[in-house]
Image (cartoon, rainbow, N blue to C red):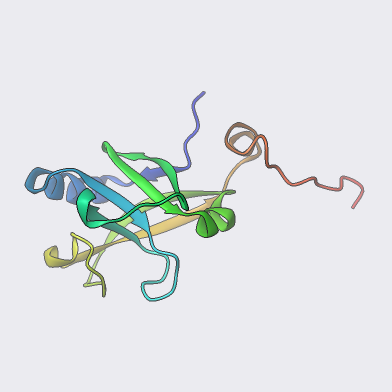
Length: 129
């Protein structure tokens, strides 16, 4: 079985594909939580500078999804689902003019997901507690 850190709802997929049809190459970058909370932001690839501190999380509808190393350290044991909700966010993300904004839902990964995706970095649990 193949595991993923990220997925997208059908509703969000619809918005993403609409934006893809009107733009060149896109990327998602998950905000670090300062001004926009923990929001997935969608940009044209050339409008977002990625550096060595950005971690590739996965692909949604052929759009790469990244977050900073600091954010990844916090989220690495979490499965993220990108969704969409009505209302304008306060960002430059490409969905904002449509009157919607991308949001995330999260859950802790299962033991099997952690073994597959975090195999070299699993916390050592004390089974005697």
